[in-house]
Length: 432
Length: 143
Ligand SMILES: [Zn+2]
Image 1 (cartoon, rainbow over the protein chains, first blue to last red):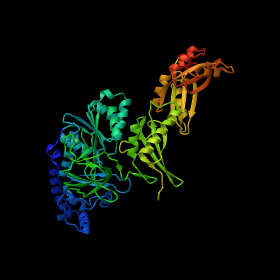
Image 2: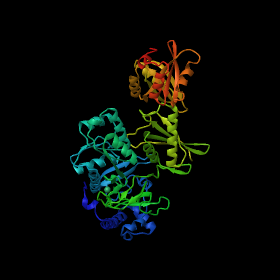
Image 3: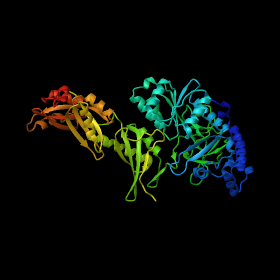
Image 4: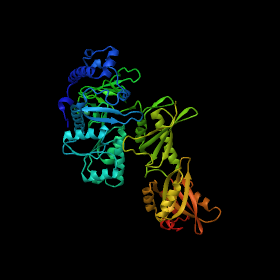
């Protein structure tokens, strides 16, 4: 079902006109309310009047996560404190957290976006959604919560963790939709399988995000739980989950372009790349009141298409992510994305998709070891077969990544299953 | 004639072999025969035990990956040439011996054999004068 057909199916011309008007208005407001951006614009010699249509966006300065950190906590907020009705924060692995703020209208916009996402997966007010994203400063839990309430569904606010209780509630409350991270969904699926409870739960849809995952992982989850799984994308700086999501076609994630203006740029030259080409995703918020951002560099690598989708929506679609430029590892000069490993393992289908990358340096040469869990019931008891399997995985990974990989088979369930973002890389190199 | 062998995947980590053996003994499962094959990264523990089905269950519950493998178990007299007689019976039949190990059982020696084609191997044994153990006997032979 299409939640807001007027917006989600408007013509490309209408989108262009709406975006241009909103962009010009937003830039004017930011110039007068955010000293950080005003200073940047003055340094670049541009005035609000120079930004009149979508194409002018490339005159604006970029914003990075560092800019948010440096203006911690409220330096970039464009409204008086009394207008701010909520804050969220993401924990930084290094240094300060980044804080984001919302006005009442921002929360309403966010709820609208999430309601569109949920409706896009076929969810209605008859459904019961178990929200197993963390609640609190993290945007996942509350973001989906407000959207689901806006849709009118029954919300089961579980938050993350306590897998056993999750499954009990899922059964007792008859949850039909699950929202959490893909790695936690896989963890839940395994626990449900082990408990032999698959026929006692009523799940039909999973809405998963907050970490990169692959199409193959989606298919595995769908098979394991007998559900349809969807990808919800978002980042707290731009809003939270619901900036984009995939529809029943599963051919890219629709971006809510009436609220967010996407660009794909070459991360080295900062020039736009053509539709279909891979580059870094950049967002300019078009309506956000509390924390409007110019050209926020997401570090997510993807491509975009403006072709109308078979589902009827006209909103541009970004492809499943090719990786993150800051998760990206450079091994022997080659750019390596962890998600490529998962994709390759799932494609092979002979082991579990859980892996751990160990990067080290021996004699000034980078080494990459990948630990892969053998499948609990289908491993071969012949050493030769296991060695063949290691070799096959090495070969497939070398082809996928472009660097030599040493594969080590480990016992099932020994690699960390996180209840939030999965930790899959150990980098032992000391490079500085 | 098919014997269910308990195969266990072990990482080369201190104490894993001991964990597996202890899990079986504390559940009252007796080991009749055992072999440990290893590579630099991991080991494969193969055993004939008093109750293979329970063996898999208790090991899995302890987080140790285990499964059952079909093998055959043949008697070989304590005499020169007994083993080569067995091996010769399989030659030219298109059956590969994937691995084998021997253990003492009463008056005889015995060999456990995993072949590339268990059914065909059984045919060969039936046509020869080689004696094979029945599963129920072998599970408890050293109990
Ligand atoms: Zn679509």
